[in-house]
Amino acid sequence: MRVRSSWRSCCDVASGVGSSVTPQRVATLLLLASIAATFSACHSSPKLPEKGSRAYSNVVSAFYIGLAALQVGDDVHAESKLSELTQLVPTEPAGWANWGVLALRQRNYDVAAQRLERARDLAPQSDQIYDLLGILEGQRGHSAEAIADLRKAIELNPNNLRAAYALAEEIERQGDANSEAEFQQVMQKILAAQPDNLAALLELSRSAAKRGDAATLKSAVEKISARSSGWPKEVQEQLATVQAAAAGSDSAAAATSGQREERSSAERKCPPEGTGGRKVSAAPHCPK
Image (cartoon, rainbow, N blue to C red; front, side, top):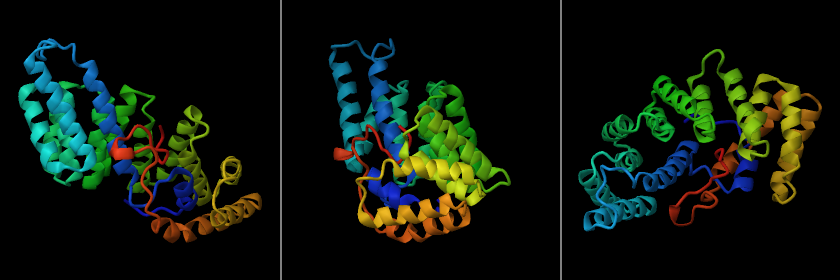
């Protein structure tokens, strides 16, 4: 993923997300938790064993043990249990999707594609699975395919802000003539749904600085400043520099100031907030 000018210095402190965790990585883990939630909704499917039976217990056990192993990085048990799950209930999309996440994490992209495509075939209206396919294609370096999958995820569920954030990332990576403008538009849509989303505010301000959009930059920086009272002095000083540049309509200086902070951002190794035991329920670096 292309290194961005950063605004990440402030974002890391506010969200607890360091450069060791990429937006795509966080999105993958978020989707993992989401798919876990959808599994319970599938229990009523007539294709699953009868609830209360031994076979049913085996399915539930395989799913949750496999999921837990996946979340803590125990790939051996994750592989064993998720594989078992797809054999016990081959028509359950959550099993294939989580097994695909395992292959994706291992950068075994061809296998991940096979598993995620199987999940998509079983649940063609799942925005979460298209979201995962978008992450896969993005990690493969296939921006056009990633954008198509992420657009489909948003088409299926306009409230999937994680997919919207990932879409913005891929649009910017693609680097077309309209990429910067569209990136900014997507961030503004996210903020329309979540006005206090700090990650989106930071990305919007960075984009506005690059594009020379002084009005948007000033507005975004003001909103960021309102949330900065608890930040470390070093970051407060960096933010003050950006504020001064924005107030003076010097968006180029603001962008340069943000770029100087990328190194300090890269030195932070904070885990995502709210990821105890790697079970992700929310990550402020990505839209919730």
